[in-house]
Image (cartoon, rainbow, N blue to C red; front, side, top):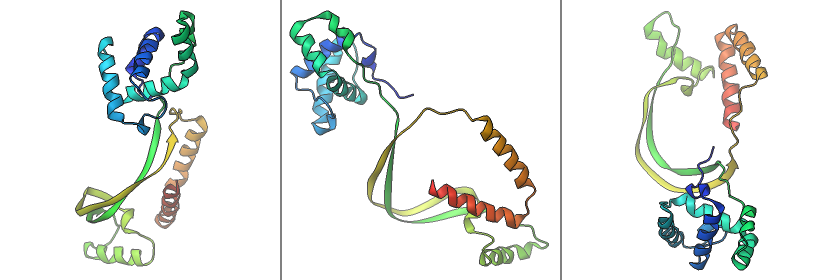
Length: 210
């Protein structure tokens, strides 16, 4: 559940009063980032003190949306001073979104990996790993990390925002999902090593496409 503005808990009458003061100060209606955000934040912080509220970043968004959603109703309230109109005010509700972005650059890195191999002689293990890698039956990243990756000379070149997705509320695991997992577990336990490696490659490929 997304964090909601602390101002959203105030009575609608007080919100209308704050809105009137904000409009008088030139507070933005709609996207606050199209204007000087620092000025908007300062304006709201000053007014918020009268209501014993310390404004934060999200509160600026709240009132920008509040003014946008209630433009007509607020105009009627200011012109008529009709108290019954307060009930028509709509309170904005924040939602959770996922921002996807890419960061690229250059660096040197070193991964510390481990992998279990069955062998009849300790001295044969490295040769066995090389042979299996050459045959395509084993990949360096089939192993597991035994310690954190180290990075050197990391230089970030640039970044880009790649999209925004709505984040829905978590859904409980369905009975069907549980049955699929249980049946899959039984099948996997009966497979040999070579088949498991091929299956792992298919799963990894699918995960990278998600």
